[in-house]
Image (cartoon, rainbow over all chains, first blue to last red):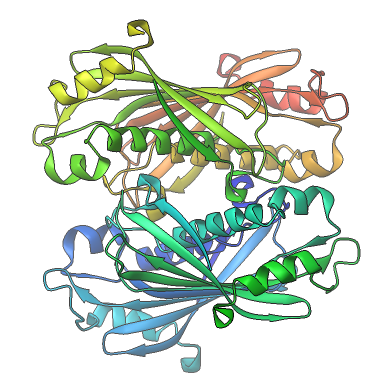
Amino acid sequence: MFTYNTFVKLNDTDSAGVLFFANIFNLAHEAYERWLDSIGCSISTILNESDYILPIVHSEADYKRPMRVGDEVNIKISLESINGSGYTLNYQFVDKDGQTTAFVKTGHVVLDKESMGRTELSKQLRNALMLLDSRNI
Amino acid sequence: MFTYNTFVKLNDTDSAGVLFFANIFNLAHEAYERWLDSIGCSISTILNESDYILPIVHSEADYKRPMRVGDEVNIKISLESINGSGYTLNYQFVDKDGQTTAFVKTGHVVLDKESMGRTELSKQLRNALMLLDSRNI
Amino acid sequence: MFTYNTFVKLNDTDSAGVLFFANIFNLAHEAYERWLDSIGCSISTILNESDYILPIVHSEADYKRPMRVGDEVNIKISLESINGSGYTLNYQFVDKDGQTTAFVKTGHVVLDKESMGRTELSKQLRNALMLLDSRNI
Amino acid sequence: MFTYNTFVKLNDTDSAGVLFFANIFNLAHEAYERWLDSIGCSISTILNESDYILPIVHSEADYKRPMRVGDEVNIKISLESINGSGYTLNYQFVDKDGQTTAFVKTGHVVLDKESMGRTELSKQLRNALMLLDSRNI
């Protein structure tokens, strides 16, 4: 698993006094970007140097407890599934008391930049994803 | 069905040149807010005058085609399901050529502001939701 | 002058119950994008077909009255100044009662896409900007 | 001075491949929120427990160099000016090579929550602000 700590910013919240539902995907993707960095495969590298892109084709979130401005957020990324040309990640949001506040999922596919057709996951990415697989622990 | 027209703004997109996946929920909620207005039950009224709130407990999106800056977006809201104290809405995103670019779903529950427990949908909201039910057409 | 009507969305606000200060620039730029569209010079055209870009080198806002979720916003764009390779725009935010809620300014320069050095405003853009000059009225 | 390190997230950028100008205010305010936390005067405390609010009445930014996805950002907050019922902060954005990429300014006033009129800065806040005054160093 990969763990990322951040906090709920004022602009993540809305007039109802809680995290606006769409912004949870920003927090999840921020964690995902830090994970990509940690495996030497940053968004910047993908956009500028690789021959593939990793678009998100599905996303979803289940909200369990309200999150408020200033709240610490601990995001745990794990692998849900992987196949030849795609993968699905889980993000568990945990507050400072260890309570789960939300679950997020993002489904990615690998596309060849030229043909825009499905292509295979790079070995580097596949190996890094396998390390996120909680069944391996 | 309720239909809302908007467009993809520069800040909705990212360095990959397409709509950032999280921002589709902003567009969907913008349409939802306009629908609430149209039935006389605006977010502002809910926050300031009603005895219930309508938090989103689930959201999801399926991305079918990339959306780019300036693209016209037509969002059709329909009712997927409804029960005593909640409802799920579908949002179909259609481009100017009539192609579906994405599907979004939001699941809402009705909570009493004081007890924060489940309560019943108001008649006004229930009736308005029933009009979004495509099976009625 | 160019006028654009929109409204304050829930995600534009924060836990203090008002428009988050940074989001006023999103609303101003949304108006600017609609103006660019109206003169046949959309962001999409600039990014994909032109030999120049129009980066913002300065921005500022003065907040006069709080804006809240659902509030109608009328944005009036006018030209503050123009020179050979740049221009500054003013955005007056007016509520439904005709009260000014904020002033925004954006300063733009014209850069050649290849050299990234200053270049001259196109005739099309210069003419359109002159029509925004309130001194012409 | 107070220093905060963060990075440019994919959603901070736009189709032009650089930080969208409005989002620099989000990064600046994120640093400001961390500073408020560090002096025991968090946004959450202000909203829920204090008798004053600190709305932003002016903001501005000067953009010196483009910032791109993944770029490290070092934000240095210093005090520009202070008076009985308000203060202005400067934020210098520095990249990993020590180059300044932007300057941001936010002007705050202190309002009494009940009367919504100007009131005096708390001693705690005044003392903390004085420590941000670079002339003191």
